[in-house]
Image (cartoon, rainbow, N blue to C red; front, side, top):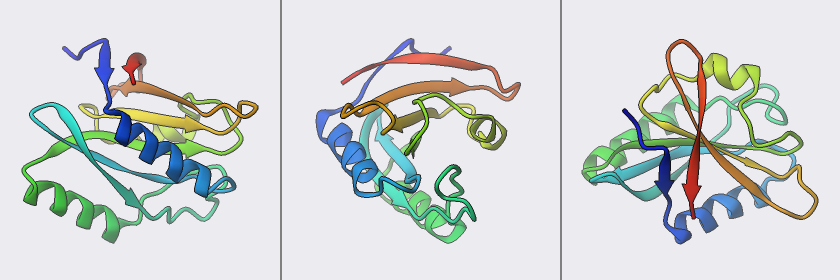
Length: 137
């Protein structure tokens, strides 16, 4: 059973929001590694989607490299993150379709709200059921 609340260190939150802001027209994506359940590092992975303005697809080589770096640091996969330049911070149909890590948290950062960056977390199980997780930032 997963926690209903997840604490994310402020420096990681700032990094994620920065990544999203530096790419306002394209979805950014990547992984977060954790040590002993505590989020530790962000791994920005190139978005290889043919339509990066509304979908994300992690570049396979960069994703493998990020997973290797995580292992070398003794981390486990904690979260998959991506941004929505023009949509709310909730999983799209494409996000649900692509959700491949039922144990990971899915973080979505939205640039859609006027001047306010929004970040929400979700668990997506193999049946594609979505459960929101409260983020303690």
